[in-house]
Length: 199
Image 1 (cartoon, rainbow, N blue to C red):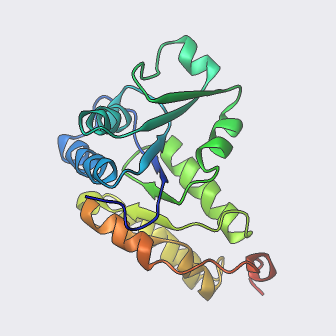
Image 2 (tube, one colour; image 1 turned 180 degrees about the vertical axis):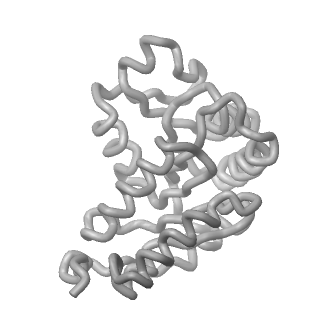
Image 3 (tube, rainbow, N blue to C red; image 1 turned 90 degrees about the vertical axis):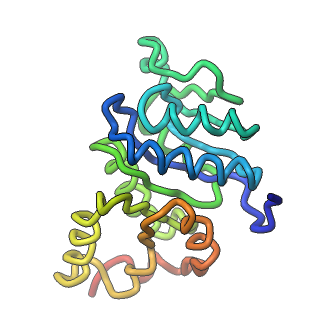
């Protein structure tokens, strides 16, 4: 399959837990195959464990490119995947998060824990301020992110976010829906900072 979508790099936020349920791992494998078949690089946290490791391994099986980004202190305790196409080392977690979204075409959030949520929320805040204009897709695998969808809806209902902020994210239920959802996402308003504050 050729990449007719003109995407080159997609960042995935996801779990590194080795106890990640198999159903989520399979969704990771499916999306990794989709990325590899479309010649889209996987940008991720660089771990060999959990969803991160499974996706990287599946990318390699299908000839895909993987770019891991991890702070030095994590590599020193051997959390990193040793067979990536490229490993970028940072000094801090903040530098890692900044590097993960540098020149990517979209961010996709898979099931994960507090680190995944931190990454998602920080990027969402950047988008609200007009500092990250790219699509943000949440994979609601088997309903995992229903609580997040309800939380975001509550933010809108209680006016902590404005009506236009609903356009900042999209939820999908299957890996096959992710690239079409990215393609369907409109260009984020370059004047986003002007309506970041709910008035």
